[in-house]
Image (cartoon, rainbow, N blue to C red; front, side, top):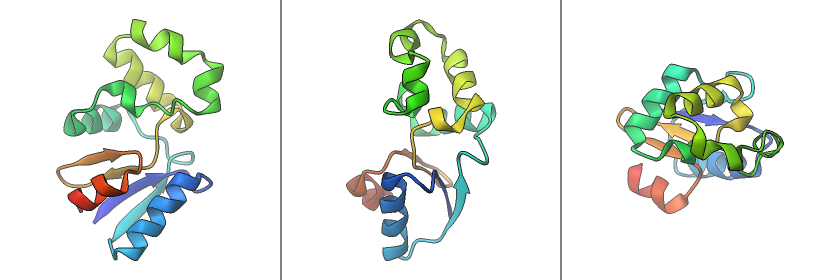
Length: 116
């Protein structure tokens, strides 16, 4: 079973959930706004995914824009970026799909098909 971390009001998350359901994939759903990822979770997901930590930011979100992170992220250390992400789930790109040995950030159907 995978962990499906999402914001239920997000249309991309809704599409991803419909895809999971359609493909009969068992998952545990976690609302990112109600249960924000911890520093340790984000750090582990980053390491497993091997993605640049910047990929974990919801760059189209209002909070990201209001904090003017586009101009600030390049000057922050990795641990500072992880700390920011762990403070508010709305800063985190979603959905996130966490399996035993993989982490997928954002919904790209082809990428999800390959992993699942």
